[in-house]
Length: 180
Image (cartoon, rainbow, N blue to C red; front, side, top):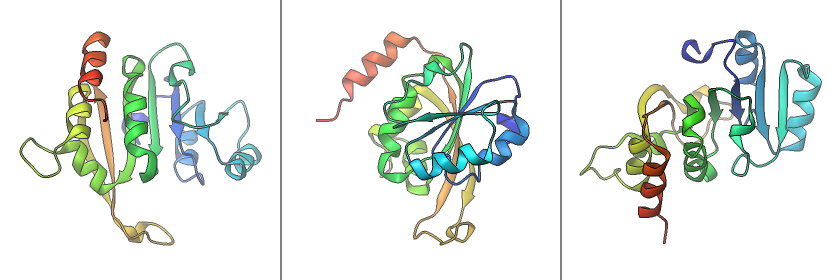
């Protein structure tokens, strides 16, 4: 939390369910933006947090315009669901010029693929695309016992910091690696 607690930097959180990250962030931030699609979670967030502290963007994070959050640099934090983590990471990468850094909890195997070295079994499109765009650091291993009910997989927290490259270079790289 230390690296994401600047109270003056707009922060956005994807997948706020059920508040395990939202509460600690709001203890450190003046205001937080969240993106959520689940109506039950939205209702719970509205009943628990005042609108002057929490802005809720209802909708799909894969379609959300993260550049619409404030006018300056932003930080993005989230617990990303496995089924959309790769497309969401690519979507978020397109807002890289606005992002100071991103912190995500993901399934450990996804983090392993993100950080994989060339000539290893985990190295692939995800590794190439994200390593081109970001410096990444494995922050924390989260075992299944940290959740209730415990999942059948391990999780990990990763920090992603933008490499300063031009937007044109990013568009060229994306064209080279389009899925077939």
